[in-house]
Amino acid sequence: MNVNAPPAMDSDAFRAGIQLVVDRVNSQEAGNLAAISPDLAPLMDSLVALMSGGKRLRPAFCYWGWRSVAAEADLAAHHAAVLEAAAGLEFLQACALIHDDVMDGSDTRRGLPAAHRVFEGIHAEAKWVGQAPMFGIGAAILLGDLCLSWADQVFLAAPLPTEALQRAKPIFDVMRTELMAGQYLDLLEQARSNTSLERAHTVVRYKSAKYTIERPLHLGAALAGASNAAMQAFTDYGLALGEAFQLRDDVLGVFGDPAQTGKPAGDDIREGKRTVMVSLAYANASLSEKATMTGLLGKHDLDANDVATAREILTSTGALAQTEILIEQGITSAYDALRDAPISEEGRSALADLIEASTRRAT
Image (cartoon, rainbow, N blue to C red; front, side, top):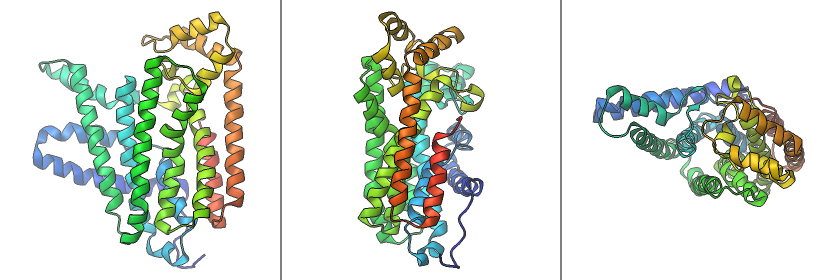
């Protein structure tokens, strides 16, 4: 490693660095919106609250996709600029979260009211005309659209060589397409009340695995001008780990502690999510268990007893245990891909740590 290269940051320092960029961008955009109208202030207030925390996994994978393969001279020259580019992924994530909460009818996000509920409350409190829920949904959709626009701005404005950004831009484009496609497929599965294991895996791959890990790694690697072999290694690692990450999210969506997840207990059941775990339960459930689970999925007034019943079915059918096995298989495959990847030893170590951070979590 070049002695002039900045040392790798620990996870806390990295998140703080990303937060600085996010805060600066939000401050700039708040000024831009204020110049249009002071009535736009609630949009930024809601966004600042949403973006004040989070795991910052997508920026982390982007950063290590770059740092793992970057030339030694670039490590010192472009370290801060890559942090800037990686922070753009937080605005894409904010867009996804805001729109996801609208589609799922979620009440909370990270322990706070979801954006559409915030705007619904503003409408109701002011006693404006029209329907408060529709106002809330419309405002949240527009806020998500703003975040999508700002994601582009932040990423493409990073002070990196033009050729580096040109290499990465097509990946950024396909990443957003895959995310929106995965979101639609997730919405479609809920509407169909379908429990196809194959389609559940497709949703996992496009809504989460590629978007959370594979494509951020590719973005960083493209900024560094990585080889095809490194790109393939990041695909092998990213898809395996990304699917394990989402399966862990599915487990937490039913069995997680609301104090840690920031979402109500059993929220995935309430939202009618046709996850891999739910599909596995249907494959092994009795007729009465299937009927009970069907009645619970999408039940908006789901109570503690309903959550307990869903948990019992997911456990007794072996779906929870099978999901945990799939998570472990994904972890093993990610480690295998990492072992042979043509990357720096520093990058190998950091990406190994990210395997644990992505899958051994309670939030």
